[in-house]
Length: 376
Image (cartoon, rainbow, N blue to C red; front, side, top):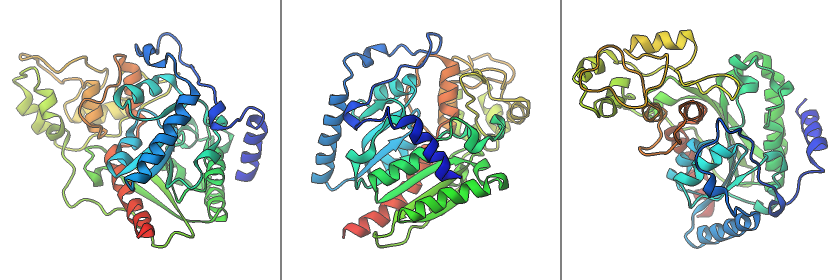
């Protein structure tokens, strides 16, 4: 099944695919969702991208840093975590220009290629330490009808192609819990078999973000492949001994930023971790906290989930506050100050679709242990 999917993808893209130094950038967002970051797209040349990749690779070699190429980079959740784990990104590939803008505005040192991963040629990054990516989750998400391989957004075949082209020492792919549903047993086994046939020892596990300090119910499937010639055995990270903070604990400082007198009582009520933050898509979802069931869960924590606020409650505020995008980012594990732009709907989508950085860091550190043992 997966082999057929790969073949279909290659048939559509092989004529358009070109080496890294020939990929065209892509501007896909309409005026309504476009961030005010247009300036950073000016004079963005692919030659500059490849030159930066080479410069970063040389610097990583001199400083004995592990290298990484990341696809479907989104707004940077996984990249932040891997960066914290000690990986130096040679390249981050992302299709949506708004997301690319967020990556560039927050981390000008990152080498971002804004283009279709189907046209990305990985051969220029052969033997990179890690190929990572959060391939789109809608094909396996209940909210998106779980079409799997029949969903045009399924990019697992592209990830397998890039593994073949790059021959990375390690592979890290993440997706939603639905990926483990029984209806995808055949497809999932094909993915794992393909990685194994390419010469990788494969491990799969469902990780809960709250086990790694993220104040949110957020299970994610993580697939790890370690190339067979790399000595050592990969082990998934163990949960932290400390419990994740409650919503009240995590958001106390942000919620009290404008002197809200009711913050103490609210924090006591918000005494659990958050329900799963949902991101939605371009066609669905808005600046709110999700469908009815999710909003009910937020209401139990004293949060109004019908919208997203522009700022923290004022001193005399009464009732249940709404969260700001900064609060949502905090619950997702993003570092303070990560800039998602000014549009709330787009920011909510970026945050809700992200892989929590603390989880990526924990997994990245485990991969690093294996690869650094290989270098000794």
